[in-house]
Image (cartoon, rainbow, N blue to C red):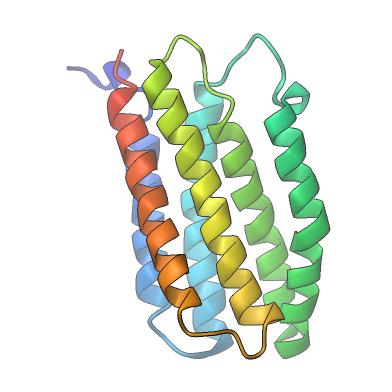
Amino acid sequence: MCSSDLPLRASTLAAQVGGWGGDVLLLGEGERAFAAGATSFGVGHLAYVSGFLRHRDRRTPITASRTARVIGGLWAASGPVVAARAATREPRLGATLLGYSGLLAAMAATASHLDPALPRDARLLTAAGGAMFLASDAVLGARTFLLPNAPERLESVVMATYTGAQLLLAEGAARAAR
């Protein structure tokens, strides 16, 4: 099978390398490690977005998508709040989180707007993976910056949704073969 038969393979592999780098960097302590991890994840989200845009539904603009508008609205209501809270710890961290959350929202929106020529199960798995990644990082952001005494069990929610998201995105890419 040639690479054109696997339309989301290269971008998904690049994105998951960015995620792996983010995971490793987040093993460190402090705001610098957090910012480096978020940056690595952001590079991964850029890879996802580039792959999803290359294989988007061209019948309608993404801005016409109800899902994309909902995701954009959720980001507008929450991204700046979490970023402002993060900036109270470290000013540069606020800007990093604002940019990262925007990339994450763009990834989830573009994941939900794939070309209908791709297999339906691939599109559904990819959209679910994008949404689950958004949910995972929403819990992480709330736990880290908005809930000063968050229960430790929220870490399990973050890891379960993150792992599930990566699995769904990888499976969606695997099933996107034409």
